[in-house]
Image (cartoon, rainbow, N blue to C red):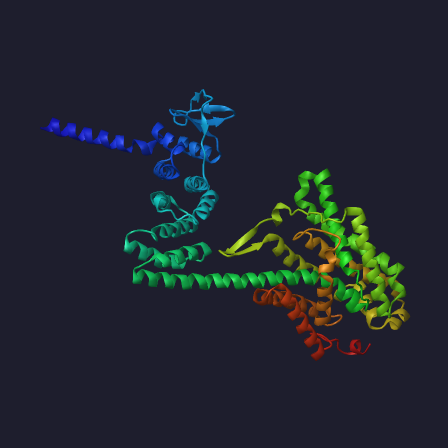
Length: 529
């Protein structure tokens, strides 16, 4: 009797091991089923082998994804370097001429990609696991539920574990068990992704149980509330980003027009010079110092400033110095200069736009919410505009040059009587405003292509910013630039880009009618000058 019982136990153990054997490694039958047959049967085998996938299974799935598998009636070959290998043993096999390529339709390719992402859930690298979980969010396939649950049990990082829990609930949402669907519908309300909203909407259209439908409706309202906040914050950030660009463009005008009274229609072309200077620096780094390419922007900033400042100083000394106090003649002369500079750019660099590449540290973005990503280049422009503003404010308010500029602006004759070389100060001030325009061009090159018409897109808006903020007022320029940027983006989301521009222009006209001096008016003797 004990012997019989022992024999039965041994037989049961062997049977259990035999049944579990397919989960411990890839079999020839599974390899062939993965490579041949209809897509539905291949997907079913794929989900089966995933739970116990070993290195050979992963290698075969990767080869199938790479279209590197052939088959005959009796064998499957993984192709590497023109040679065939057995997917189970790894040994080299002769590939007959009759071997056919495995063909994957779009459905099968998607399943293979999802399978590879699922396997990465068990990587030792937390970043790889997080990326795999992010990929699987859009593929709530219940057949992969055992693999997800296994990954949840093994996961130690709370954020990744939470993401996997959300994937698990998304898979349970289509379960035949009402209790599981109700649990999933309630739990998914904590999500905030557009994909989850779409999933809940699809399930709501199919659900027949009233309590499950009610739970789906509650979760949808919660998700829509979070997504709405993401959209609002995205509009605000886009507006601040646009306002920062307008601020950079308008800062130079705040000096040349606001302080010096020169209507410089070539200001946009000075921006263009800064952008082309950035393009030239980029190409020099790519040719002569490719190893330091990541730092080219740091060199391009002073180069773009100096290039535009030198051109501006040349314009002031040759043309503009003779036109102070004659605004109409200044406008016409600088407009003619802008046309000459555009044609010069076309002759040197060509009429087509030229690309300026972002360095790696300005590429990509940071995910703040599921539907809100802040691009690094836009964030950098906001920070850069703030730094330029602080530098200009300090220069004007706390340096000897700034004191001379303010003195010449407020009372040119008295400044001359005190021994200040007013002509030289005019040149310095105009060069400073032009150099800031060059910095704006350098920043703009990081968010779009550079072309001869670059400055024309911003010159009118820049003048509106200066006039709205108050002539000669840096603080007003800041408020006007950021305010117009945010207002423009809010109106774009409501009425579209064209009507938004018209509405902003109407608002400025009405505002100037009511307050001609702008947001901040000059006070004291400056207002009477």
